[in-house]
Image 1 (cartoon, rainbow, N blue to C red):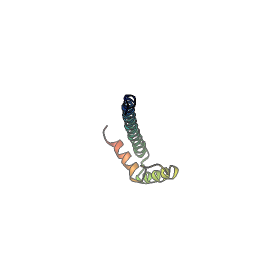
Image 2: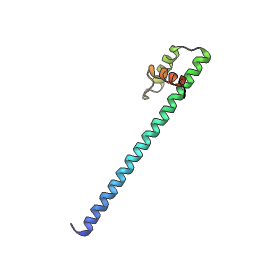
Image 3: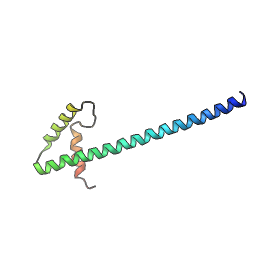
Image 4: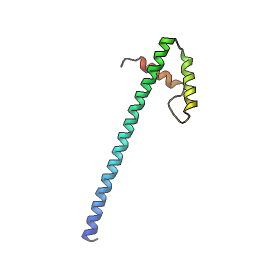
Length: 96
């Protein structure tokens, strides 16, 4: 290998390592942002359900109906099986 091609290979390796590190960092930041937004969404859902249960005296059946309606309206969405909205409502009742 000549001096130029060795330098090229070394610079290329540095560039590749730098790009991989940037991509991994961006992936991690994106995943953390998504998780933060989901936790906030679930807390807000729980607050909405719990508030209406207190005001209107809704029971557990409304949770099952919400779950079914959400899954029907958003079939690709995960996290809204019957226990989940109940968990969201329970979390909302917990002290923050």
